[in-house]
Image 1 (cartoon, rainbow, N blue to C red):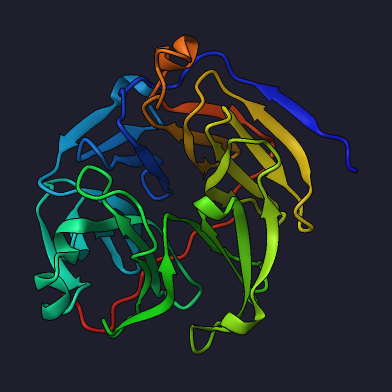
Image 2: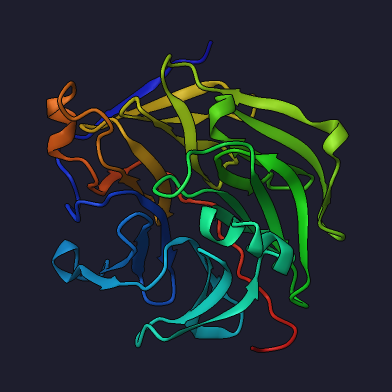
Length: 313
């Protein structure tokens, strides 16, 4: 077993008191961090040139689970939201749908009400993969979720179904393997991946990582430039770094249990968190529930791909 490097974080970078903080994303052009609060329907931004004092929060009319930048469009970002894919202006907050997810029949059957977007990522060819799940305030999670893929021509595909709580999605540095997390399974799965077609081989499914801590599940993850994974283990107060064999080589201890997603900005790892699920039992964890944390991990993140649109909408 490799030696495990230890980090310990005791103070937050920011205390926005998120209900479910997710999707930390570094806008490299402006050195801005953005992240969302899915439950409280808010978009948060921080100018990293200034620091935490520049924090701004915007109330949203819908829940957003994941965001990505758009190739050739520095003024807007694309997102996976309650009903589908949309685009939002970074300054004004004006937004519009570009593709809803559900058919008319599915919408009538309640899927628009019952489900929402959760996590997502853009592949090397600019396709935006977004996982959906039952929206807990409306319906308890079950295997009704779907992982969608929106291509640059705005065609919509359903490469993985069913899923329960879809989380971290990424690709190997050679783009031959896709990594996908369905949190209740406690594992991160692998699939052979064809970057040209965007197809995955479901029959080649394997297991890359299994949560080593009882009671925890893998949530969001981020890859660094060495191809190692930084994985939030929800319910444990830890983010771990795993090598390409899935072995833990580093561990970040945080002061709240419900850590949700890490994201890189330079060599800093920013980590979102959610409300403590059992505040009466875990009093210390509840004190910093929903906070954002920052750790200098000494390695840069793998550059994130931008969504491509053939027809500007």
